[in-house]
Image 1 (cartoon, rainbow, N blue to C red):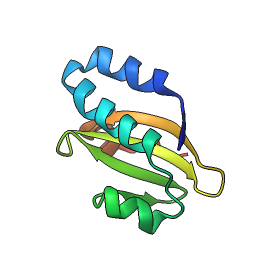
Image 2: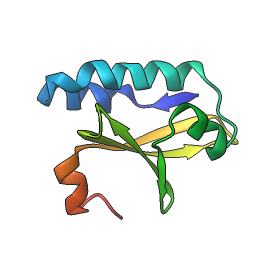
Image 3: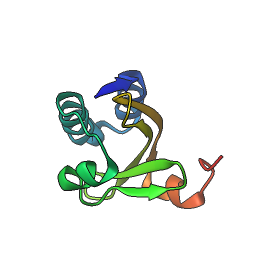
Image 4: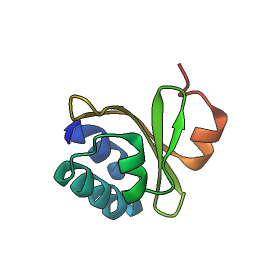
Amino acid sequence: MHIISRKALRIFWTQHPDSEGPLSRWYKIMRQTQFHSFAALRRTFPSADKVGEFVVFNIAGNKYRLIASIHFNRGKVYIRHVLTHQAYDRGGWIT
């Protein structure tokens, strides 16, 4: 998958250093795998959920949340937000 953009991950792990390893692993798996459907994605990331038009990933044992817009037909992943679980629960990311 083509991920747009890794910069969002780097910015987040600068503020939350313990997220760097888990976010790097997520990035590597996503970059090296071509998912053709949400069902295929769930085989690799069983805790991924669809919330509206977004896919929400649990990162670092659910300590963080990565919200992405995934276009399976084009092989593109747009990172929309990387949040702490608390910020995710406040719901300000929903558009």
